[in-house]
Length: 68
Image (cartoon, rainbow, N blue to C red; front, side, top):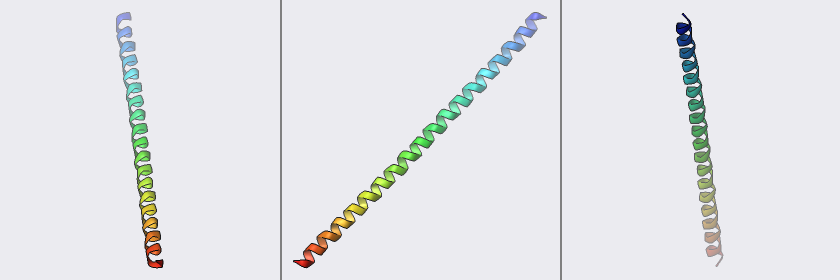
């Protein structure tokens, strides 16, 4: 009888460990997805800023040429 109880407890412990591992893995994957999304957003923002700088530089160059 004691053996059966030990087996039941062991199975419960294994299930609890498996569940905890699944939760840890889910949280790690979620954190990775969020970080990648943040990096992509930052890259888009930097790209847009550079595009705006290039546009303004071209405008200034065009203005300078017209004044000459």
